[in-house]
Amino acid sequence: MEGQIERIAQWIVSSKRVVVFSGAGLSTESGIPDFRSPGGVWDRYDPEDFYFQKFIASEASREKYWKMATEMYEPMKKAQPNLAHLAIAELEKLGKLDCVITQNIDGLHAKAGNSEEKILELHGTAMHVTCLDCGKRYDRDEIQERLQKEVNVPHCDDCKGPLKPATISFGQSMPERETQEAYHRSSLSDLFIVIGSSLVVQPAASMPLVAKRSGAKLVIINRDPTPYDDMADVVIHSQAGPTMASILEKVKKSAEKRMEDRRC
Ligand SMILES: [Zn+2]
Image 1 (cartoon, rainbow, N blue to C red):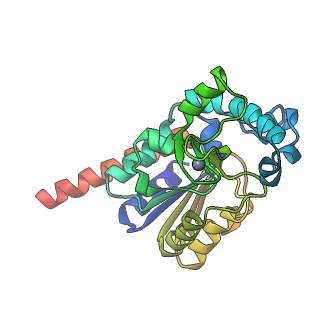
Image 2 (image 1 turned 135 degrees about the vertical axis):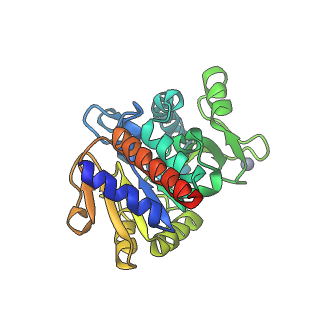
Image 3 (image 1 turned 90 degrees about the horizontal axis):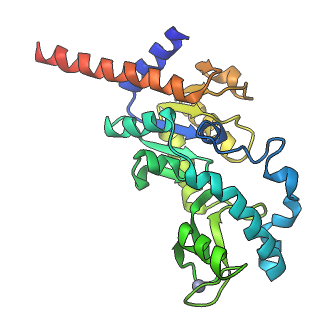
C-alpha cells in the first residue's frame, strides 16, 4: 500500500485540478451511523413515509418526518471531522483542491475548514432548514430548539410555509446548480479521488466515469470494493482517515522538497 500512497501523493503534487468525491464512509468514520445499514434509521422507519410528495401533502407526514429527522440529526450535530476531512481541508490550503463533491449532508467538510465555495453538496445539507414556500433559510439548531420546546412541526416566520431540512429527500430532484457544477468540474479534473463512497447511489456515482472519460486519473479509497474499481488507476480498500493522513504527509514532504530545490 505504501507504493500506492506514494503514487497518489505524486499525482496530487503534479495535477492541476484535483477533485475529491466523498461519501457515507467518510461520515461513518466520524461516528455518524450509515442510515442504510442494518439497525439504521431505515430499519425503524418506513422510507415510504418520507417521500417528498408525502411531506408536501400533510401536516401528519411532516410531523413524522421531523421526528425521524431529529433522530438522524443528533449524531451529526455531535460529530467531528476525522483525519480524512482534515486532509482534504489541508489540500485546499496547499492550493491543491479544485473542489470536493460530497454525497454527505453532515457539514463536516466545512467544519474541517474547507471554504463554502469549494464544497458541492449533492444531497443538500442537514445543517440548514428551508421554507418550502418562500425559500427562507434557517440555522438547523434554531429550529431543533423550537421542536424541543414549542412545536411538532415548524413553520416559516415570514410566510408560515412548511419548513424542511435542506437535504434532498426521496422523490425530490437533485439540486440543479450543484449537480451541473459537479459534472462540469468532474469533466475538467485531471485527478479524481473517491473517498469513502461505494459509488452505488446514482446519478452522483457516474461522476468518476465522467472524469475518467475526460482523461483524469481515477483513485478510489474505500473500505469495500466498488463497481468502478476495475477502471481506477489506483484502488485502496482501507479506512479513509489514516490513508488520507499518510497521503497528505507525503504531499507536504514533496512540496517542501520542491521549495528546497528551488532555493538551491
Ligand atoms: Zn417562508
